[in-house]
Length: 169
Figure (tube, helix red, strand yellow):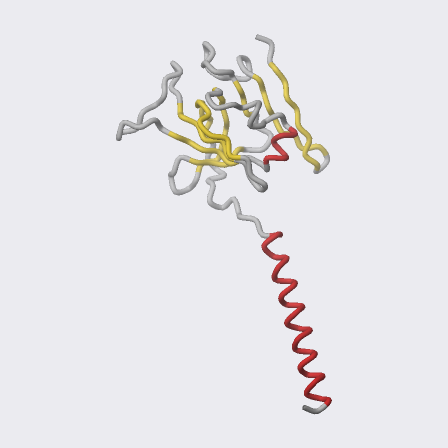
């Protein structure tokens, strides 16, 4: 091999290394779009927590939908109606006070979300709208800001800060 061929091979290897290292950084920056959610539609739902899935990018709360009497709503096939909601990262919502310990299984909650466009029972929690925790039984009058503990993320100059308040009962 001559000197020119060695230089060309070296340049090719440098370009390949550059492409490889830059391609490895894309997955870390990748994040899904919220286009799958109907941002024009909001639903406020009350349910009993059946699963809390902490996640680095988004946590999920899975719950059985409750009627106004606190009974599980039943689907056409005889199963409880389940819904799920995607929240911010586990770290972000933990700063708000929403953790696996504070929202144990069976906790009654009310959440406002943008549902999936395809009609499945799942949605994205809407920022700056409270998530309400009402203990293990549905209070008379429902799980509302007046009857429950309010967890609300608030934007503060572009940085997320969180407030948690217990309403006077």
